[in-house]
Length: 283
Ligand SMILES: NC(=O)c1ccc[n+]([C@@H]2O[C@H](COP(=O)([O-])OP(=O)(O)OC[C@H]3O[C@@H](n4cnc5c(N)ncnc54)[C@H](OP(=O)(O)O)[C@@H]3O)[C@@H](O)[C@H]2O)c1
Image (cartoon, rainbow, N blue to C red):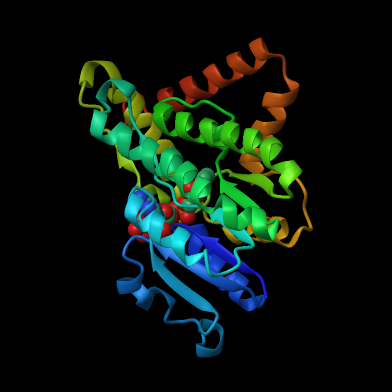
């Protein structure tokens, strides 16, 4: 029976992945912030499936908790690490405090790299896999998203480099790049409020309205699309990183195949349409 460790397993893609892998007979080590005291989250999972579920507290920004996870896998096989924990951040760079910037980069990137590093001995032994949940914002820039994009672009670079480094050791490293899906992501994201009214307020309103429109779509894409792609990578049915969702795949296609100047001008138009849509609105 294979064992998969998932970070950020308390909601969204992470929680759904726990449920999916238990259904598929995996042993799942679900980690998250204070997850042991939040075990009610898993109450709807039947008792026989829960027998294969282990909960471990892991805030990816807590070195002592990373050390405990490492120690756990000194006595147990680890077949796959899914680095899913992450946080959104939206707003003008001028308004981002050091604290918010560090929190975001530490959670989305530094914690992911530190945990991966500590679990590499276990993954080399099992010739296992690493799946990093990145984003469409790991290959496309977007206004008011610079710090989040920086974190996810870096996850992409980390993934590509590590894949080459670990190939000779039998460890596969992939990324999954979702577009927009309805999880707790937007509720949990840090929003800068456009306090420099004369400068950024219109853009902040535009982004909020754009996100509101996306969140209220009558038929939003199903987050299981992302979960199923992660499962394909874990099971070896897919052998390369994947971009998931119509919006993300369109972006991926445009970025890859349009000349850079054409792509840049298209993105500028998209950004400016997003802002002009709120002219005169009170959002
Ligand atoms: N939803 C989307 O549209 C979308 C698109 C592209 C990429 N993504 C990426 O997908 C991943 C999962 O996000 P989601 O959409 O499922 O959002 P979500 O429902 O908000 O889930 C995020 C998970 O990360 C956890 N987390 C946050 N900070 C953490 C920390 N310091 N240590 C450990 N866990 C932490 C959260 O735990 P708590 O319960 O403790 O907050 C939660 O379990 C993220 O990496 C996100 O960037 C999402």
